[in-house]
Length: 579
Image (cartoon, rainbow, N blue to C red):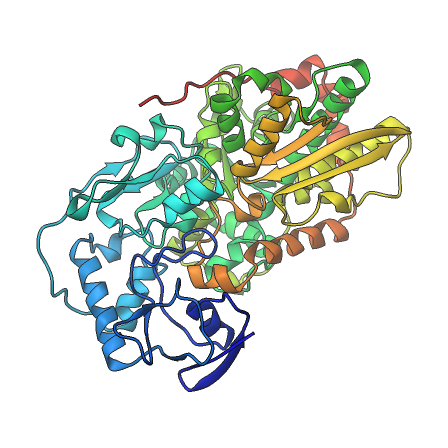
């Protein structure tokens, strides 16, 4: 242990701890911009400088290790003036349209400028070119707002191992760009959106589809149906100042009704369909010599990653659509017919914790009989903006329930929002189906938790099933390479592109680097998801009454001809970008 003093406060921390980490342990705030714990610890921005007695100049606290007897001052007049100078230099080359910026009010640069009372920019001169890349259906890149912190680069390169964006050029010409300065749409970006979550400013953000959704709502000839993913209900409240992970399902449903949607349904019902199809597809492959391991396919960023990097293994992917796409197809067929609504009038809007779902919804395969499964996708952040635009006091809303007949969903569907959840939900149904009875053991603890890779063997009806769960594309690559090289022998594989799964999706509320470093955001949201499962009346997808009804009346049985028409899809090789 190392003993030191920070702002006259005695501190004791482990050897190897940085000054920044030591200060945070005693609730002393040191500002940062480029720092992102375990992702981008490079000391580039210099906002975290401090004074250390006995040393000349300033120390960069995010990369300087503590020493025995060190005396640190974090807010001397000279430190404060130096930080203001850093802010001035950053702002001198920044597009300062804060009032119209998508990150207004949730921008780390803006908050620091306010904190240090930077009202005028002293160094105003030439600016780098203003380029906006909005070709992708999911992500917009605005170079005029980039502060060269490289947090997005660290996320894409070190966490996801994609490397779609990188630092280029030197000096004033330095920029964060793609290979050959191509659009994110045309390089090897998977649209996972983790770069957006890492960005401290508005240089990267989701493509905003709220205007499109408003037009649908306000069109009297359109029948609008909104569906919400499981992870939305444990993230949305954060946009209104509620504690991380608060389950706001009831207030969310009420808000959606007040926005003017004709029907408010739960994507969890779609997730129950996914499990019915996927579990039975796995049973068919496992018992009849089909292609193994079977891999889940409900994460579109993972699917795009596989299509670009492992096209020779696409036959391993389940042919199931993701839950919201399945549900969209059901709504425009079964629901439309049963409730006498012309399918052409129906517009399905999905609220997702994910920006890759925007890309997924426009894939040409995602339609049946010429009708798109889903007509628009908005993130949690976009939904929050819509609620605020309507002057709805979210925290004051009463609770209400999803509407019948599509409001019934199971706990198995809820856990789709966490890494390992799809695997666990599928095993619950697969086990009952294979055993031919309802089993009491339904919690598969081995696939739970925030570890990037989880491996286990489960026994069903005397047969061992080897499973692996991976979240984060870096971990996905490890598993795929194991399979490609013949070093692995799995039966069932779940992969989610975002570390932790949808609770950490690219469309979730954006948290500052300080919150990410001091609070386990993923675990707080995951705990809330598992609580939903534990309290559910039905915890297995095949027990859902509405699922049983729709199979009896419309789809016949899982993996039937009709089920394949509406609930399954195909994949194809995507060329990698060559430069």
